[in-house]
Image (tube, rainbow, N blue to C red; front, side, top):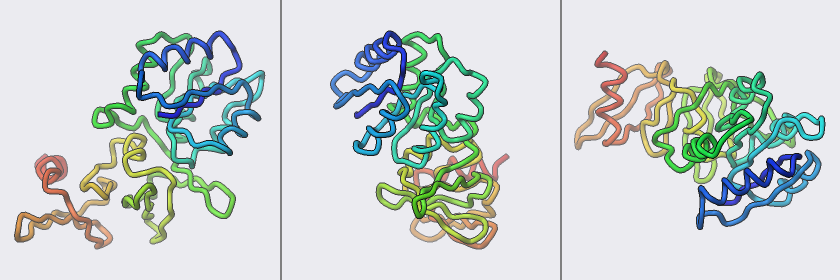
Amino acid sequence: MRILIIEDETRIAARIERMTRSFFGQKLKQLDHCDSIADGLSFLAANEVDVLLLDLNLNGEDGFEVLASVVSRSFHTIVISAYTEKAITAFEYGVLDFVAKPFDENRLAQAFQRISTPEQSKGKGTRFLAVKKAGAISMIETKDLLYIKGAGIYSELHLSNGKSELHDKSLEKLELLLPESFERVHKSYIVAIDQCEKIMVNSGSKYDLILKNGEVIPIGRTRYPDLKAKLFDQ
């Protein structure tokens, strides 16, 4: 686990560092700290991280400048900020969690737990997924998603307009961010529930999901019972 803290208050940064080391223990490979937006962006441009812990007020500068620049990247972002009025916007832009200051070790551990136990995590209203394309970042609304297909360390976003975009986050990481209106139906697919038309039961205990646009998505055997109950047994 490689973690970067962007926090301008030395005392709070030291506290976050202590709590982070306590939670991750030997899983923590690298922990770095930057105290300004400029230093944080420079570090992220030159280094790979797994988690960013971001304050939103850095010496009077807006941490959303960092968020807007890195939201399309492969790592998760946890905001730690006193600006709770910005929490909804932060979630809409795809942060994993928003920890309000002042906070205790238990609250920060809850945020870290979302990384460690993804099966217990659900998105909190992510409205956009950011895609970097031709040097610019475009925001895709989740309501325009039909399904997402895993593509190694990346993900393919398939949209209602027939287009597709490549996202730098893996399917596993996107699963943590998406709202409950999306369902993991296969190791390689997440679908929008409102786009599901019917389930096809094939020979050999194989199952397919037919979307409203006619596309066919495979269903994992272990996921079939829960999906069937959720979609059609109500």
